[in-house]
Image (cartoon, rainbow, N blue to C red):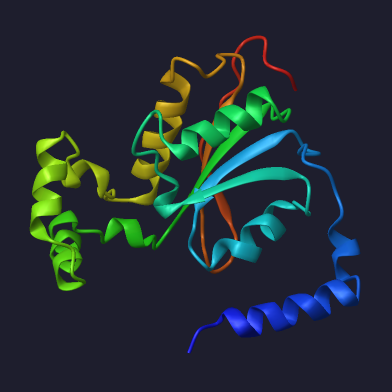
Length: 191
């Protein structure tokens, strides 16, 4: 059974009771920060609370492992929009210990594609078109490696402003404790 009917029922009640009023804000991040983080369910509420963020404080961009797989993919585009259009003046990449991306095996995933009815010819065509499944589905050996990969890709991006600092953190998904991997204050950066 689909979750959709229960979501819609809850939403009608939420709107009717005006519970949204506690979350009213605008599109500009009050703390002028964009956060690239993992989609892990343990971080949904823990991460903002552990860092003191409330609704409207930051732009959150989430994906598997907080890893940028492509310099011109949607996560990087979101970071550029946050900086150039929405007032973000710092970027923080936040990975976490125990991330599922440390266990990703691209070959195993490709096999699962076939198990779910994806024609192997589709994979072959993608590979022949230059899309390498090994690279596209790659994970990392530890959270710190994944964070530094994304930090470096952002810093080196030809469209990313050099004056914007890019920090890297790793979080404990049980306690919310944060370890700074790299704190980036470049010369001439604000605050």
